[in-house]
Length: 535
Image (cartoon, rainbow, N blue to C red; front, side, top):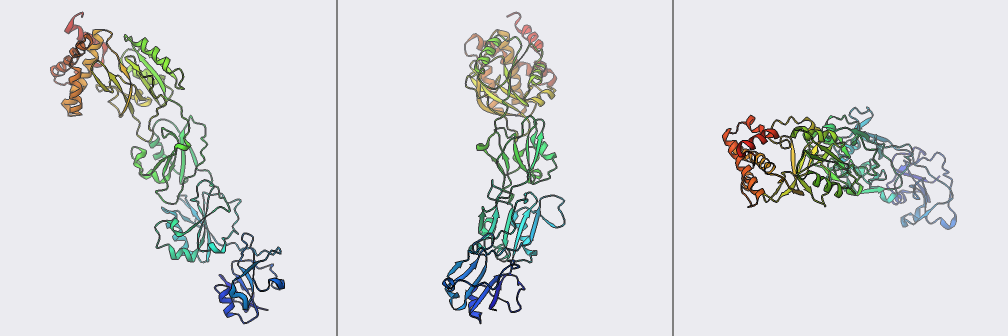
């Protein structure tokens, strides 16, 4: 029998077997004309050690394949020729199967099994903990979020990739969750690297390991952040989408390697369909932007239901003209157009519009506004923020100013219905945001009374801002324009209304209940007649 050398674990096949790092060391130590070099990680149960090469190949190092690689780490060599390192790959059908190596499992569950290692912040940190307790030269590391029903654990790398970290993808992201590790090499590197990919990674494509589906959560209402905060995550990620959506087909899987990778992934313009990591929950307070890692996947965007458009009128002079114009410019858009008319009271009219809407937000278009033909009806709210109203800009040619007065407002349906209207402005009484996008031109001079009362109300709100120290410079600039005539009859009555509003504020000394009377159209009409009679 020839000398037998081995690398790795001791095979315990022959009494005279002895360790050798490689066939160079084996050749230097051999005392027979030929020698075997085996790998202790192979299964030699059915191997024929009486095998001998054909004389034409006897000067090569005969190399036997495993079930996965041409070089299966089993060698037969003539001692005097072994230092040449010339190989001949045996192809007579002989296969030396690889033994299965130990498998360590990582669990993402909060209550993980006792035989698993709990995932801790990053794969690098978690793998360090596993490697420290590993007793085998090679190990598999699996996770409980992957499906291994078709995975072949006898796989092993090419001998030239021995020292690399082998990572198996799920077919979507190369940053997979299954690892083949050379323990000794990993131990040498793990204290010197900050990122796992610095280890020297073989992004292995020999096998695909699909992930089990993450949780799919239907949510109702407008507050995605609150819904996420209340959710009890069973997996590292959950897919959230509005209840009215059919299950979205998203071909994307996020990396879990470290927290920075575990972003909130958005797949709609409104951020209504998201993959959210469990990590985000501890950061959230009022909005998803509390979490620092967010990515929008515009290449994977899913079409959303456009916001309803609700036209609100109550006998305004230009109401029918502006409504007909709105119908014409929206006839080819997918938004649903609704009309709420003749509802007495500002609060009641706004809430009737909210009740009519079938979408969580809706575009409120007021009868005084002639909407721009190129207004973007595909605009969407931002569900990552707390629920709020969105105020667009409108141009007021009489006052010569462009801001949120009489503009389109994207009302939050739920907030509008709940609004007690206890302040001076229905919209500003609740969370809101200005969208600096032009929505149209406001026309309100159908008669002197309408122009006057419009200016009267706006002047009270602006003057209160100044007295309260809110947006003082901006409010003063706007108020000055409301109180100044542009030389036209409309401008004259506009100026009278603004000045009358300021006078009334001073008259009641800013008493809030007195100021709130301006909410009521009948009170405004009475005030107008008191000052001007039947003009």
